[in-house]
Image (cartoon, rainbow, N blue to C red):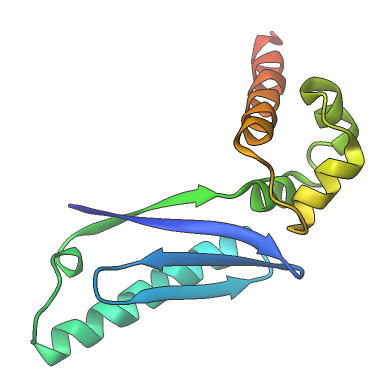
Length: 133
């Protein structure tokens, strides 16, 4: 089974996804995270049908694939808006709210260390929720 990676970001009030295939690049946008995931699947299926109809040089991924989604920090923070406050995330990461806002809108991209702080902060909050009995 081929694993296809869909990299999802957020900018200009839309989620965007990019899937790099051996013979093409699939790019889709949507206003919601679920919508962009569905658009990725629809686009891949459309591409698959085109390859099968042509019968020429059908890439291996066409026969059996699964999609793995990788969210950039911008997409992750936008998805969590309304679920998790930036104030709470700021407290557990040590990154100020304004900077988190820049990351969420896609105006700035966090360095690897900052990204790790954000991911670890979200995990820490999740662990606290799981500890509630």
